[in-house]
Length: 99
Image 1: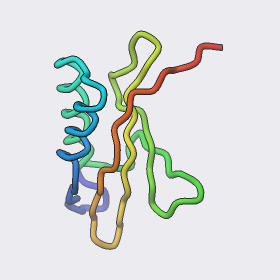
Image 2: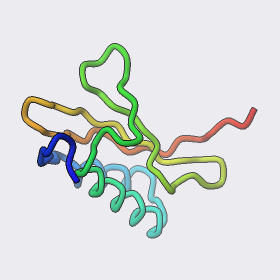
Image 3: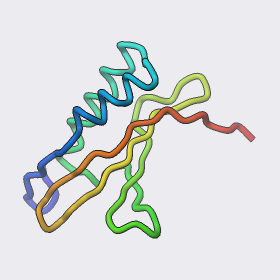
């Protein structure tokens, strides 16, 4: 399944994953989960993502299945609908506040 029958092209996904791994040294299991999530976004890059106000086509979302021990991995990427391109920006582990 693709959104509107489009085939999406990913840019810089490996670079973003490598940068995250070098910066944060996540466990092997977490690396696998995040990598699988990233490559499965090709069917619908809007799924689970929120467009960020003030930025043209910047999306942010939690990587499904990564929430544990008061933290979760998030991802930001840019979607260019005219070229059906998803340009990955960053993966980051964020602490989740429990109020």
